[in-house]
Image 1 (cartoon, rainbow, N blue to C red):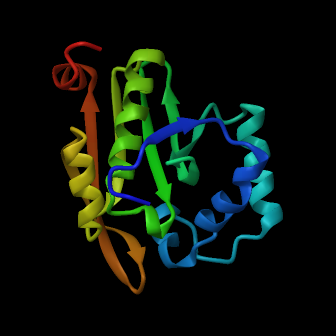
Image 2 (cartoon, rainbow, N blue to C red):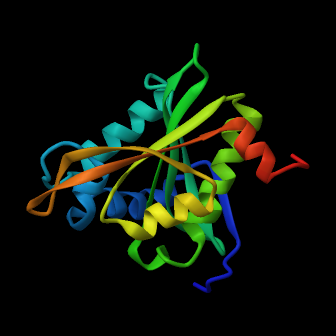
Image 3 (cartoon, one colour):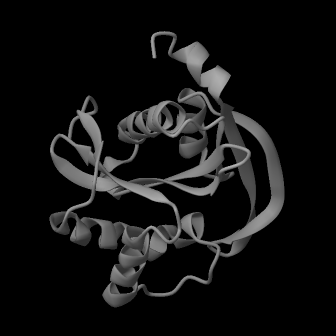
Length: 179
């Protein structure tokens, strides 16, 4: 998969479930994605989670991240606040898709969707402080560090800070004047 991959976001199909399950069940990065205790994720529990998303009960939006025609992960908008017009964004990619600009391209596309299609005023996220590559990618996409939750997460045997980042619509519009 080249560094200049064509990245698109699309709806999930049945053919994507194996890749998405592999990403979601990766215990190596569990603590970076979930606040719960790391534990094996069964295929049934994963499929139940997908069914909940499909039902619309959680109001979240999940997209498959595709690079050069291959599903490599997902990006989501969730925790919508309809009154304040904001939501949180999260991304999870296969290990071989990281560090190639794919995540940055996917984040830029989900931001366009959030601000233009969903009429959000603010998009925010949380990242483990030691995941410097992720923090850099989010900054490259235009996110601003808004704060730090000190020793807020237990990650692979030690407490880690959580970096809280956000972007306001006017900041996004300044980066995309023709949008």
